[in-house]
Image 1 (cartoon, rainbow, N blue to C red):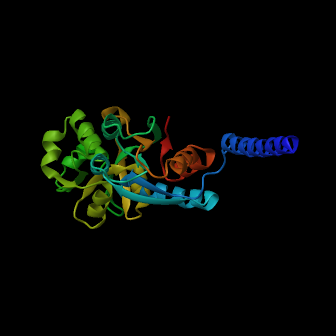
Image 2: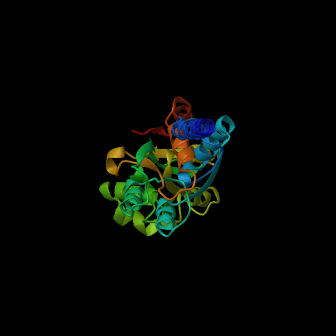
Length: 263
């Protein structure tokens, strides 16, 4: 009887240990693989509107993720993030505003430059084109639309005009706008004879024409740093999306929309 009881105990112990071993194996198994479908919230500079929307659609079709984007001036978006706005990715048109978000401890890892751009002057499509910034001193150009001083595009334009020694002549004609898309609207609506935007914005608006391009040496390098945010709810999927944007497919889309590759 004692022997039989001892045998039962051994069987029970074996079963318990066997179950425990199976659990341990499951817990240590490789769980890497595609991330379950998630909604990725992106806050991006308004000049990236068309690119991010197209990229989000293509990426979503391939992965099942959903990319939900909101656009605005980089300064406004950075302040929103620092005030607690929920997002997974921040794409800035300014390294300075990205640094502020990083310094606030809100970025996971570090940022990477996603793309670059060019500053141009635009006029209504059928209007005469000034040859350069100095030509804007003519009486024809009474109102010049320009993004606000804290908006990257506005900052770059003011830097270029100042280096050209034209601030005294042109600044009285400046009418500030909240972002580059607002500058475009002012020019297309006839509210301004000319405006300063990125080349990518000019390509996206059929009602304007590029009059001239500013020499890149006249202003801070135009870059778009992108980063996953530490408090985002879909960080794994967000990292996938940024990796996709830097892939061959993403680079092709960047070129299509007029951007140059980043780092």
